[in-house]
Image (tube, rainbow, N blue to C red):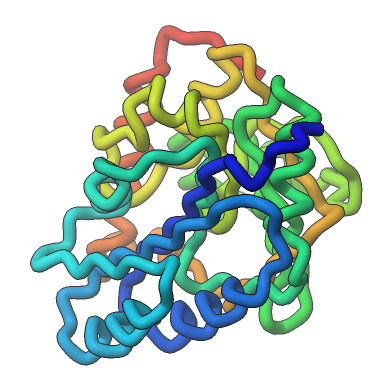
Length: 275
């Protein structure tokens, strides 16, 4: 393990969308983290809501926090890249706005694991919903037909049910440290040089699919994606992409999910899955 951790630059970014109260709570928890490295926290806001922005701007009073309020919703990937454009870091925590971190040693534990495992590009903890259930943050590689199956009555047909269970990684032991295809972007630690090498998050996608793309690129660059349940974070359990097929006609976010999924499938159509 590196002994000069205090010289490491670690950035933690939270991109908010109308969850200011939760973000403020999390940042205040982050101030209590027991760490041996330099931490910069960036809170970016895609909400385009003055009341939400006002709550977030109270965080500017904290020495290691910078709040960036966007005048328009740039989408998930571009907003991250814009907020990080001039930031120097060796490691990057990408954190969703619904996350709470109660373990005061969590950041240090995750960084320590990365330092002694230089072949790991992306590291994600166990995630617990507010209702106490474990979030299934690990997935098989996205496939448009599997996503349709999962949202319709077809998922109950035995042979399709088996495909869906495998796609949702329902067989996974969520108490075991292990290499996985990809991790949802709720809370991930990413190696900084790798993140910069691939140009940040892929802006081909507006809202979804940047997380499997990030992990796909990690595997292609001979870096592992590791699920690390020795530490855990807490989430509200609300998924913006939740819903059935009929919601496709009602919700813009569902249609965006489909568009991004099609982009991912087309982008990697002729490639072999790297893991």
